[in-house]
Image 1 (cartoon, rainbow, N blue to C red):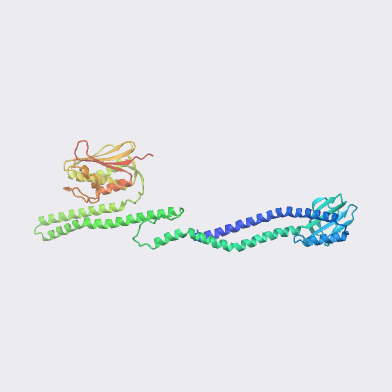
Image 2: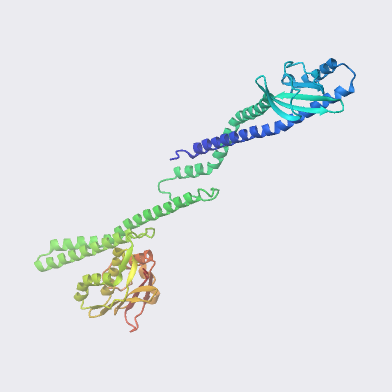
Length: 452
């Protein structure tokens, strides 16, 4: 695990520079040897030419000529004591030679370049015959000179690297610090925030590499903000909705306490039960709505048989329909009434839609439930013979706590808000219309069809 990006980049980059410099140094060392060899070979050729010219252009004795050449050669920093020359006549007589290495005789070396070990040392030799002067000129150079030159170049390169290495470290640290400045700024902005400030972090002047991270962080802030708002809304809604039933409950209890006969007391206690039931219903609806925040994702998603689920819920609600002498009917199932979703949430949706239809349908009315397969969608449809909803109010009925004026049926105004939220989570469409017979309301929820 990388504990610090800064130190990881610093160490990694310096190690990379070191490795690259080492490879470069080795490569330069090998290349330098290849460059030095031809250069020094060329020098041997030039020296042999110089010796031939001096030997021809002066009438001095061989000893004087040798001293002149020795002087010229020994004043050169590249040659010095690691270089020798010899001039041989055609009959094998040594005419001139260098003052060093007097015991070495090279008259038998082949013409041209050759390598030879003499007295434990490796020599690079060049010889040429001068037919005009009837002499053979031999020049030789210790191989150690060539190796020392290559080593000196490599050593100079290494010294330069050692001198510049701290500069590399400072530059890399400075560059990394500039690159991480945006991360530091975002960190400072978040650390200085109040716990209740959940606005998104600005994405301006942020490198592309950390924009996805900041973007996900902003999404988290949005979800947290929505969750906090939902909790605040739940508390406000609960206080608002429970105030009236609790006040009524207190009033009915006081009436029961003051009642003089059992009939009045029984009526008051019945009112208490009704108030408790209404409060329980409001609390249940509020809790359901609180759990279905817009930012929540569906969990435990699986194929759901819409018809089978409707059978179970309608069987549960049939008792309420019978109490009002309402005829409730479920149509036949299509071939594959399967949708993808959370069966508990879809069950709540079905229950609220059917329960609303029963509540707002007058006694001796009808509620018909059908499931329709259009090929692309599975439509859950509930039609009733109630008073219906005016077209201008069909959007508002999905608002929380909104109830149409003059409605006598009991309710909290949250049922359709819950239905709307569950539909959104399942990417379903809701459509309200008047049934073909012109009476009541037709409530459609169109789910995307599941294709196995």
